[in-house]
Length: 130
Image (cartoon, rainbow, N blue to C red):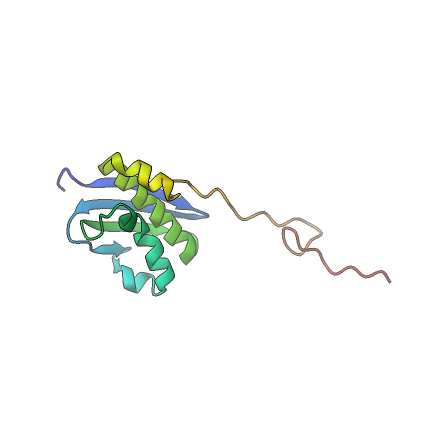
């Protein structure tokens, strides 16, 4: 591995993404699959590449991503944060840009636990007066 690779980790809900950035032609590999294969949905794909678009670095880096846990949306979010953090490690000038776009804030929202005597965390069982 050459010295220019940058590692970063991104999390969102229950997903953890390990991101490895290396200078290249813009190939994005997630769990050994192409970006298009892993995220068939355009919305999630655009979410993943947002940090590059904002810092005008599209096509300058190859990205290898290992992601596990959570669902597709959480994974996309985790990857997005991971890439943003990696870009900051590459050059600190990206920090202001990404911060302004809200890309380096870890979304703290987690699933609320289910409570006893209720159907879900907040939904109750149907109430019957008689």
